[in-house]
Length: 121
Image 1 (cartoon, one colour):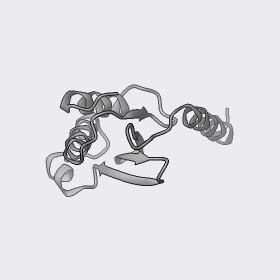
Image 2 (cartoon, one colour):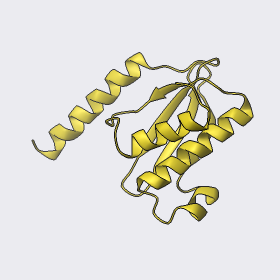
Image 3 (cartoon, helix red, strand yellow):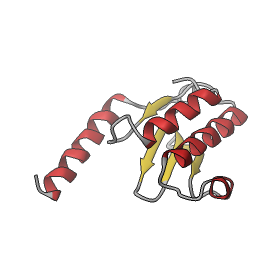
């Protein structure tokens, strides 16, 4: 497979996930994006088209604790951070949007840390 077909398959997988997962005001969507150096998470209300809470490895609180933004430890810190901020706003239940990524590694570490901190999904 060349790089274009890999990108096309990833894009197709993302569309399949987004067709099934949608966030409402009562149960917003926890969306994850990961790059090689960082990981980002947002809690989104799709009906209003608004981001309610966001966290990433580029935030000062996470950057101070994690030396490298692209490992499982940093992803766990982002998961804890977003769960604490969501609970502070009053969000307890979310639907998890892993985007086009497989549920392992950094994505799984973020999800498990968010669940451990109190988010339900």
